[in-house]
Image (cartoon, rainbow, N blue to C red):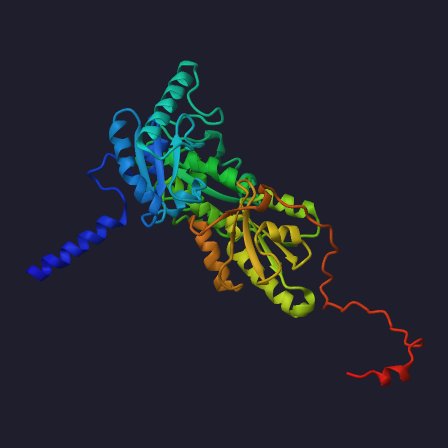
Length: 440
């Protein structure tokens, strides 16, 4: 019995340290299953901390965060997301480091980053200022972001982003389209359909933005358009089907929350897009456009062509192309340059003249970068990018705080390098007899 109690005690200890907060705290534990209902559909202002249990700063913040939750009880909701366990939520809100605190106010789709101190008083003061701002907006007639309409279920999203589909427009809108469609077949009296509506609406807006309209969400009232329902064998509500041009419709197998729908839509999107192009940095425009257009730009500095030959360089580039394909869902930019061609760039990233091939990931908005510490291989780069994806790994500020000057160079022609030609030495004026008399 004593051994059994010991095992139970150990089990409970493991469970208790997994997260930083417990049911006895005033901090609401948030996850993909309840985030939409608790936060996005709420009229309350929310402070949400995204943390990782292993993060030292998060552990230091935990006691103050609990004090904040207790102090603001009944005034402001305070929650926490274990973004290490629920990285889909962290990714959804652009969380790249821990702890990250966001304020979900009037426009729940565009939370504000909290930039203040980490003490309980500073956080409470910021929350009360946000409450005053929210009340002032409501007095002025503002009820939320101007781009969104409130749904009957209280969710956030633009109702117009869910395309109304009918017997008359379905074929030309969906079947003849080059886009990917997620189509919900519903009945107005169906309780599950009513629960899904705010999730579907919010997901439609987010998917439209993230895929630039390449994935669309639609809805069919199957009680009105019975021909469509019969055509696709709809026997229960809601039923969601996936339509891709030239393929038979497939049943949607994902979850029914906003984050689940968005995640599934992004998977479908990434399956049908080409990986980003691997570009050589031949001028300033290439670097600037790639690093400013993408969340991250991955830059490799490859050895000089005389050190590797064409085959060696191509092998490095194949590794990069493979990883660009693997991470294409992230929509990152991929660049490379030859060692010595862009010395100011190398210096700004602390690469500087040795250790080729090298790789850095740059966030041009924050002017921060991280260096690949492992091997320049699929395994090494995958581990590097996986750590970046969950906000781990050390970063530094780009030298000078700005993208460096880039030299305009000729693009690589795909061939082996050629040693530079040396001038012939004219020995006609040298007296060889005199050379023989020299003594060592």
